[in-house]
Image (cartoon, rainbow, N blue to C red; front, side):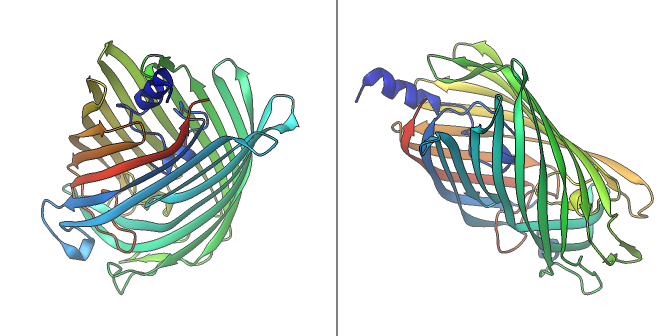
Amino acid sequence: MNTPHWRLLFAASVGVPLFGQSFSDFVDARNPAVPYASVFQVELGAIGTLAKDEDPTVGLEDDFSWDARVWYRDEAFRARRGTIEGYAGRDGLFGSYTDGKLVGDDTVTKFEVRARPWQFYRDGFYRDDSLVPNGFYDGQDYEGYIGFGREAQQGLYVELGPFYKKFDFDRSDLTPATFSVPDGFSAYGGRLYIEQNTVQMDRRRGMPRDGYVFTLTGEREWNNSRGEFGANGFTTELPSAVWRARGRLDWYIAATDTMCWEIFGTGGWHDEKDRLQNTEAQRPLGNQWADVQLRLRMHFGTSLTVTPFFQAQYSRLLDETGFSSDKELFFGGGAESYLHFSDSLSLHAWYSYVDSENRPSIRIDEDVHGQSMFFLGMVLRLGASRG
């Protein structure tokens, strides 16, 4: 094996939260800093949760489950040398094909399919920082999207395209008998991405060291939803059209040769009447929300990184009356670590605590969550190659 090339491949995965860890990496970022031109990556492990006060009637439990995610990427797919990519995880499924020659004139065409077959909705309100349910239920959504993008100027990428979605909903063990879940429906609309990328790579380590990637997304959606849903005197019907905006920031600030500050943030602002979108359980609830981490990535030699972080979440959600809103702030922190045994095998562990009863579920078959979450697993990379 060529030693310098092996070291570059090995360093590319040291310390940075590996791209391909989440569904959001693919649907919210358009041209992120990706360490590999081709790779097949599998992560297997156990994920757990601890609730401050257990309450199985709303899914707050001490529990653990198996967890897995798979990521595949090839930037030289077939004769056209397009990019094919796929992801499968607890938070969703994603597949895409990117072609820079189909339209021409420096336009990039992206064909994407997206699915979230294990989606949870937590329709409720906060009372003294406690999440009181109107009704918790399950759902699935599937989407097809075609995007056309190009660089407007150096580092600034703009993409526009149509999408079509299909939604279905089911009752769960957490759904009260008095709560009516929404009927399934279809939706379509248009989406605009604007992304600024100033990331500078550390050539010695092959990883982001300075700069940022900021992606702003706006969309308009129309649907054929019919019928009201809800309970306890608070039943509503979805409007026939809604708007949404969301943003994602990955910001790297070099501190020393072995330390780098990282600021990772996501947020959104939606139509207040978009009751489904505003009650999705994998992020802070509400029509205005934000989730920010301040991280310090520390390298210990060439095989170990430890990244402690502070986390804050903001949620603006309808209150108990359904006519006005409450604003909630939640704080927490944790740490993430990688121990690399070789360029193809790593141990990955993390712990996260946020003082919020709305954390992502650790299972796909039922909604189980708690204020504390932890993970321990192995990452296997096959056929990893830098472009």
